Image (tube, rainbow, N blue to C red; front, side):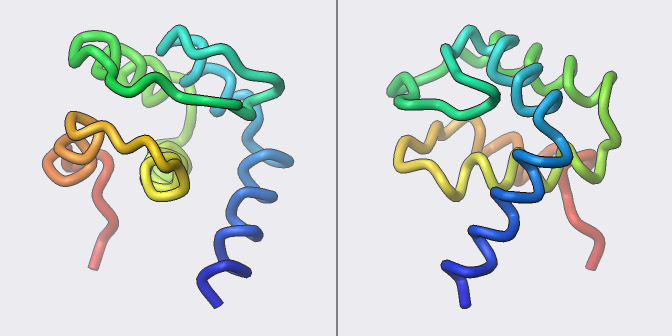
Length: 97
């Protein structure tokens, strides 16, 4: 089920929220094609990551940003520790229980 859910989530993000993906990757300075990345850098500077998160939160619905950032972290082999910390500590990126 996890594979199917991941596919649905990726499809929804790419079809309905491509601008969010592009805005985030552009703010990070990560090359992409329509929100799809070939390879991520091994690390990302804290200031750049924080600025990218602030940027997308100012332009897109916070709930969608939270879903995207969690999916971005979980679906990529490259996992930045500072991204994990943001997802765990920033209340704007938390899901209600």
